Image (cartoon, rainbow, N blue to C red):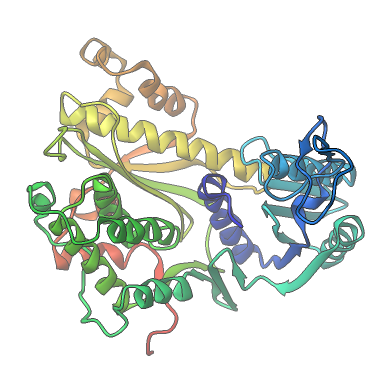
Length: 433
């Protein structure tokens, strides 16, 4: 059972919560709600046909539902509404910035709850408060106590005194097994340096459906694998009409995953709580639409909590405009993470640090006299200057050689790929010492 879109948004909140839990030594528990959708109350009249085996007295008889059932469009909404009301009744506050997050602060104890359909993560600094919430949920809905957080929605969580490791090893191995590549030859990078082949016209693969299935699975794997985000974003553009080159590129990703299926994020215990972001853009890199690729990555101390590789929705008329649009996207993400940290009552260091290697983009953000030259940029992109003046972040220069966001905007040579990869805070805990 999985609501994909909310989970894609909520996974960023989960990564942030795990990074904070590692830094503060919070407890991490997991619960599973039995028959979650059956707990929902219906606020409208809904009728259904009689189930097979039940003989009606009249041919036109139907059943009126008193409670929610699996398969109803209203089921998930009604279940979440009932859970939310129950949590609010015992003092939890519903976050305005991530609807899957609930927080409670009382007498020096802090408890946070993340919910995804019927799976619940409980964390906080007080074990007694967590036990109280567990008992309340069990008495109200009947839940299974799964103990310490270890496996959640195909995400594997391992904890030690040094920190928390988040990966999808089993999920990655299942992909390799389904595609018959468990014994395949490994490769050191997920994408060849010259990506122009992706835009060459060639024959379609033998089974286009298999290509779409692989890319769909890889999209979910990017939740813990920032190293494949760019290439998966590139290949996902060709789902409708893939070619042999696209299929071969997907196979290369799988052979790269084969080299380290347990690669994942590491959130160290010794980490500050200052947000640090890197923003970059590759101007007009799409040979078909001439749109630019934006990329950013955001760290909480030493923990990578958010990243993105995405094609811009409009064509940028200059590299400065492309870089400035990337800054706007990064600024919005920084602001959202700042709001989440406030909900989690974290005393974080402000302003955040935002690194950009484009001098012209920095000048546009810092110098209002550039306004006449930037009228063609959408007004919403000027959120960068607005938040910069409000003190949300410091905009700092960085050399292109040290720009970590390059990882999310272009295909890199092997040496550069390995150099930047080592700085992302990823780790394979199953590799030999």
